[in-house]
Amino acid sequence: MNESIKKIGWFNRISNNGKLERRLSLGEYKRAESWSKYLVSSGGEIKAKGDQMEEWSADMSQLFIGNKFAMGRHSRIYRGVYKQQDVAVKLISQPEEDRDLAIMLEKQFISEVVLLFRLHHPNIITFFAACKKPPVFCIINEYLSGGSLRAYLHQQEPYSLNPNLVLKLAVDIARGMQYLHSQGIIHRDLKSENLLLGENMCVKVADFGISCLESQCGNAKGFTGTYRWMAPEMIKEKKHTKKIDVYSFAIVMWELLTALTPFDDMTPEQAAFAVCQKNARPPLPASCPRAFRELINRCWSSNPNKRPGFDEIVKVLEGYAKLIDQDPDFLATYEPREDPTLFKRCFRCHTS
Ligand SMILES: Nc1ncnc2c1ncn2[C@@H]1O[C@H](COP(=O)(O)OP(=O)(O)OP(=O)(O)O)[C@@H](O)[C@H]1O
Image (cartoon, rainbow, N blue to C red; front, side, top):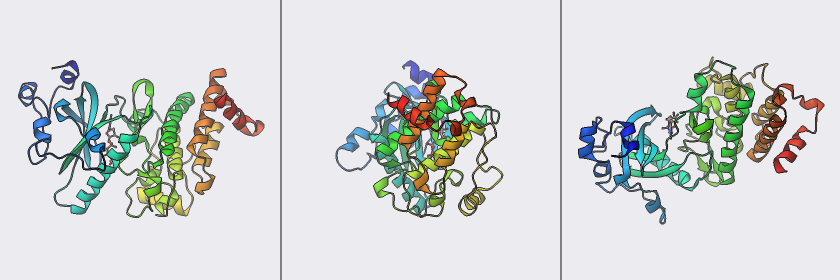
């Protein structure tokens, strides 16, 4: 047994009806050896167009599953080892009693796998493989030991993150989103819970369950994103564009600056109403550097056309990062109105 497998300690298995059974001890594991015999037996591969299926389908003889460490609304996430690498295994089980939900989860699974398969970027979670054995689906991604950005922020004192760290994290997120948009994909659920931390506080964008190709997104009717991070046009169920992710990015920047939950004195529905009807936004702290304040205010503008795209956001943030290299106090002392050329300078230092 290799070291990675020993590390995760316990091993689970899926029964013939697709249910995850109790953990196996190491002794039992030796008999079970891997998930292959449980998950692959009835040939539940992903049915997809073309040859992609072959490339996505997990080689189940190479998958070992350890402890559950997180849960989503309809999923459980386990540590695991796949082809000798640390992975997170997301198991989605379709409820027997709710056919509509079961169909929706299957659609989301297929869509997430199709999108993940084509994404390759240092700020996007790395996808390894997937398998489908209704009523259970699994997605195997790289394991990110830092957990979610939300969990990290909730361990910090409010307003305590160093602005330079805020900038570093924001640059990572913006680069991931810039790449995603360059691929024609809208994330539609960008929030700190769907941002994961890897080595050296590198942030990676994750959870593409409700993402879509911009050309195929349609309107947002029946949509299940998260209100506190959701752009007003999305809440109103109008046709939406990539700019909804820019709005959510502004809320994530607010989270970085405050380490709090947006609109935490309201229910999600009250927050949605306040955003749409009263143009409410979570209050930026007085300590917020002006460089961030200006960018955030543009990004969460109620008019999507006034929001910058991620190309511009990345350039601006990278420009700030370069200026910090020259002057570590740059963010504290930045006075934009007295220096109208700053944005241009930022662009120049990025491109030079
Ligand atoms: N690859 C990973 N590495 C480390 N932690 C992970 C990984 N994938 C997921 N997690 C953890 O599991 C949580 C839920 O994962 P994810 O958002 O992918 O599930 P989900 O079913 O789509 O959730 P929801 O539908 O509620 O948004 C994340 O917030 C994170 O804490």
